[in-house]
Image (cartoon, rainbow, N blue to C red; front, side, top):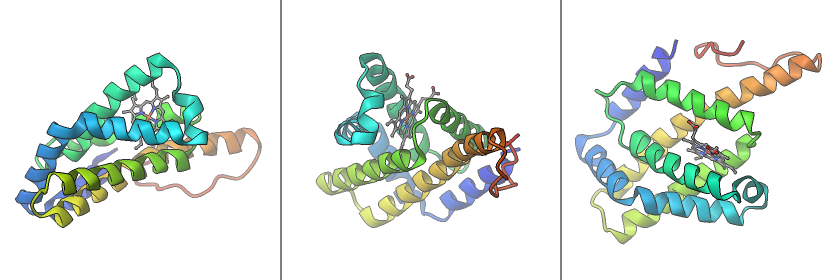
Length: 177
Ligand code: HEM
């Protein structure tokens, strides 16, 4: 079911040379904690997001999940099991939909991660920064597309219960009931 999105992910990765892919893996490994902290700091300053994140347990769990996500998504390689990675993004989208995190707030979070990464690349004077940043933005956007599909499926279900017609969904994903 997820194979089209997995092949799209592979195609996107193969559009970049091995050098930026390797550089991004290294940065994800060495800076996942700093990036997750940056994400969290920005979100806590955000009025819409802060209320959902203030609980200590959420903080601990989300920090761990975010670090793992950075490693998996920024570290993904064409030969990896990208179907599993796609399925995981859908699941994460469902988690956010269940707890009612609005899509635009999640996207704001993604933007803060990109900003944080750009700062790390500059500070560490990583070679080929432009390519590394392009690659990171491409894979983050792809993951966001997947997560937001799961979130808009939830919106579709809500429209249905209110007797409203559905909005169009990407039939390739095909998981909206
Ligand atoms: C780039 C954007 C984001 C990414 C990549 C992301 C990633 C994740 C991941 C991987 C999980 C764990 C899902 C699981 O249980 O398997 C999670 C859970 C969660 N996320 Fe996000 N998230 C993002 C944005 C946000 C934002 C903006 C908020 C709130 C303002 C938020 C709030 C939460 C909460 C409350 C949980 C559940 C934590 C728990 O109690 O376990 N996330 N997120």
